[in-house]
Length: 188
Image (tube, rainbow, N blue to C red; front, side, top):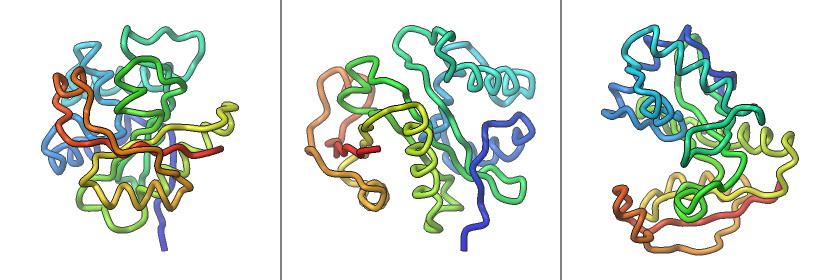
C-alpha cells in the first residue's frame, strides 16, 4: 500500500530535497524542474534560494508568467510521505522547442533512488496526467531513454502507446543525450 501523496512544491521540504539530491548525486533530479533554478542562478543548498525556486515553481503554470527562453510553462507536483520528499513530476504545458518535441516531452518524472520500486513513479505520472486533463490537454508526449525499462513499464501502465524509438538528434547529443529515446503518446 502506498501512503505517499501528491502535493505542490513546498519550501518546508528543503532538508529532505537536499537529501534526495545527495542520493541522485546531481542537481538534475528527473522531473524536479531544478534546471529552472540554474536559469535564475539560484543555489538550492541555500534556504533563501530554495524558497525563491519554490515560488518560481508556483508561478510557472500561470499563463501570465513568461518563462525564460527555451522553457515552457509547466506544473510541478511532488511525491511526499511522512514529511519526506520522494520525487516529483513536471507537466510542460506545451512542446515549446525542439528539445521538448524530440527528447523531453510534456512530462518528466523521477523518484529518489531509496524510494524506487514502490509504484511512486506511476503515482507521479498519473498526477501529471490528471493535471494535463484539467488544463484541457488532449494528449501528452512522455519519453524515456531506451535502456530505462522501469520507466517504459510505468509509461505503458499509464496508457502510453509507443510511437517510436529514435536516436538522439544532433542538438540533443550536444546537451549530453547519448541514448535512444522511447517516445510514447498518452490520450487524456
